[in-house]
Image 1 (cartoon, helix red, strand yellow):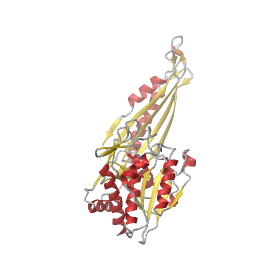
Image 2 (cartoon, helix red, strand yellow):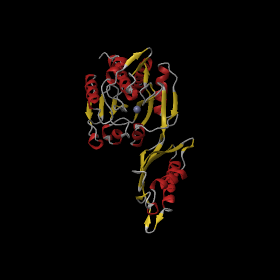
Image 3 (cartoon, rainbow, N blue to C red):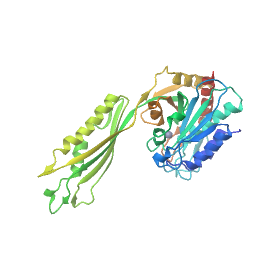
Image 4 (tube, rainbow, N blue to C red):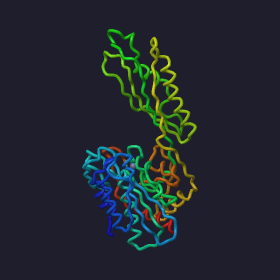
Length: 373
Ligand SMILES: [Zn+2]
């Protein structure tokens, strides 16, 4: 099949696929994978995520007897992602400034498909290849969390979902999400303030006691959302707070999470009025678990060798955010994240350089070649 990665990328970003609405792009990709000779399958992850299509899996049989190697990317984009109008400006592709471009993560998808296509059209011997295009990564890694892992035969793989081509992200933190509801007592603020217990004041005092921001080089935490109150003349009886904590170190994550929870509990217990006691509902959920590959892990070495084969300098880094790869590693796959060239992601200024798409494609191809040796 003749495929040009730039044209192919442009065709993909024109298909709307905000989270939970990936069906149109998934159907196009399913067709393209089949045309390239893959066996394809959709799982039913969307029945649990509320999306309109499941994760898309593709299998390319190889002619070298080896465990398959996996390539992943996510099909959804962040908002605003409807009606993307991609345009080539000098050395890059941009949107018209009213939407994201969707290089996050369609650059990854395009590079995977075009890299595999190059292997196939050159008739090269290769190991079996699995591809996985997930749903709803951007709204909590939902597709990866609900994936039917029995489909995957690979032991190692790469997700293309980061910035510089040649740069491999080999670790990411764990994250805990905190949802807190503080219950005070409602009263008229002018007529009877002494009969109220102000939930906003409790929240303010509790948050003031919490650790906040960067705790150390591997730990952060944040309160990001606060909602409460209905009118200035009512002592508010309810405040909802949402926050998070992240760390590469599980003990540190637990410690900072405990400190945030303790700040709430210690504050709430000071607010009483007669028989009334203020209370807090606190919900802590682990969003994803940390992973860290060593520099001499086969996943890292393979990618580094592939970079050298195509004349780019390999680099590794440890990221500060979670992605599908946290979930894959937790489920027994050894995976790292390849930069696909996306820049200024999650903004309407998102762009990708033309040569990143071609180098990213070459990187995928070189990884398959190196793995197939
Ligand atoms: Zn992404």
